[in-house]
Length: 166
Length: 402
Image (cartoon, rainbow over all chains, first blue to last red):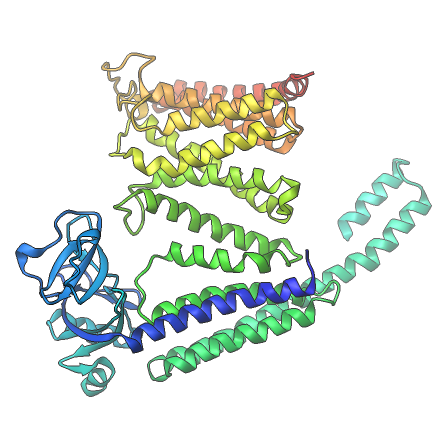
């Protein structure tokens, strides 16, 4: 069992899986349609958690179109009407959507609620997001998978914004 | 080496070994023992040097993290993985090479770091235990090729953490970041899962023997922690808002474990009965409402007695009784199959629980001089009883199935 071929395969397996994982996310980022959502902090909770920002995404959903119930898989339809549906009730007329879930508070969670940042810019970005200056650039694929492309501060990529602030 | 020589001198004086044997052993220890020692130091210095270089590289990268393009970060990670893989292949044929296992350790750690890097670059919102579970799955094949226990131990440790947290997360819709509400479910599942994995590694057909010691270690540690945790909770009459669904992974694990115990050819009916009884009692101990209702008989330090609960229905009476019963059943099994070290540890814990029970019920006495003398006598008495009865109990348990 412990042959050299086996060892080679055992070494190649994790490299291939990790590379495929990175490639899939890269494809997701580059091939999807770009959508921009405003983000906001939720006081008094600390937005900073280690090396990432946590925030609430404003999906532009009308108040009466929130999650129907809590703790279910759900989809957020973006077009033609922004509305949250239980996963199996998404209408065929919906041409663009994001898969996610409704949490215990019946809020839609898309898995995009975390943005990794270098520690030295944490405080600056924290203040700007708290001040409602932040927007999230998201790439949405046809199958409902979404990935973060960038964080905008006052309409500019966050790197440019923090350089200008320094 | 000095200790070995001293022991050899004593054995020579006692005529346990001849002069010829003394010299032969002494010569062997001087040559092989010293060689082993020098390798140990070499190994430590290599690790230290590599760690310092690694820290320097990490500092440089961290200082320029924002300006390094994502492709360069990923390219460096995958380039390092490929370089380490090549190093492992080169070191494979060198017998006794510490480099081989050091490189495998570095490779599997770098796999974990790469998962973190991908999450960071693509802003993937996930939990640490899911990342660890992915890591456990993709690195399992390479761990089979390691020669030192450390690689297996590292893998088993991280795998158990990932599996336990992921399992409870699956059955619980509101697992908090620290999981403090679900701690009972986490502790129970951890001990049962580690025990089930340990028994699986003892099946020769599965070729998992190299993981046996690591799973056994975690089974013992998590088992004792699980028992102490629930004893403290139940003795205090605390009734947290447990949900039965959190315990589903533990129940599945208990069913698998019981099946493995019953199917194990090396165990007699007695061992199977004892271990199954331990599992059932532990499940009852953790069950949200069957045996415990939050009523206690003794308040803290027995300053005043609560009269609401009768002796047999009080949680702080049932809890130590259950703890001691579980420990006794397991000690009988350990003594019966010849695990003497485990038997000694478990019987010591039984004695310790008796002492704690005494202070729980008679804690008020400790505030007086006479009470302290009585408490001291009680501790010495239990220690003496444990010392005197241990051998007899061990012999009794050994002869049970004969």
